[in-house]
Length: 229
Image (cartoon, rainbow, N blue to C red; front, side, top):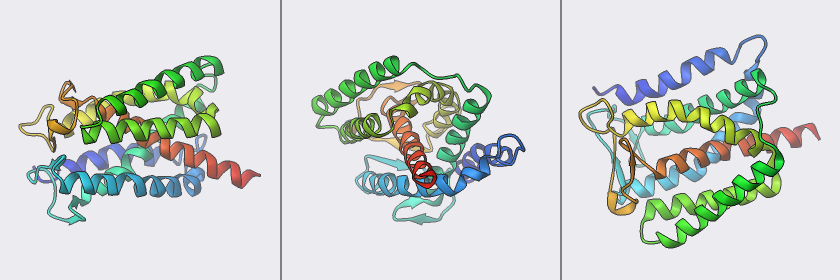
């Protein structure tokens, strides 16, 4: 099914996009901060993706994407970095709108941050010979350290909303990695990751999703604050 990957992108994007115009939510008003944040995040993740693809650390099954590629990446993979962050950040803002008190205390959030920071840092050191693991965890440690220093309040709500985002993450990423279909849309070279799977999903993908969304959310928040000053 050549259209599977693009249908996953469209399916993830279309509902959040339509509800962006909800008269109470008015998420479209955040676009001026959101899209620059997404595009800057792509400047990190696209080169990373290209390098990993051309070195066969992961790759894409041609049975599931259209024939157009840019820098070795299917056009659907480019769209992934727009559609998924958009859907996830919309989810974050919607949950914050509906449940404004849905946040951890500063102390609990800080404790979780330090625990994650230690895990990411030690993991990057211990598994230095596995490219996906080390880059994933090292970027996670650097990003988390910056967010803790610059905008720690984001984390008080993000830790909780990310747990909700894990539901669509397991559904979409599950299909991408081979759940419910004959072969995976995205395959992984297990020599470059821990080989630990959550169903069909490499465990590193959860950190990848955590950092990709947090990168856009952090930048969006930064742009919004600067505009209001």
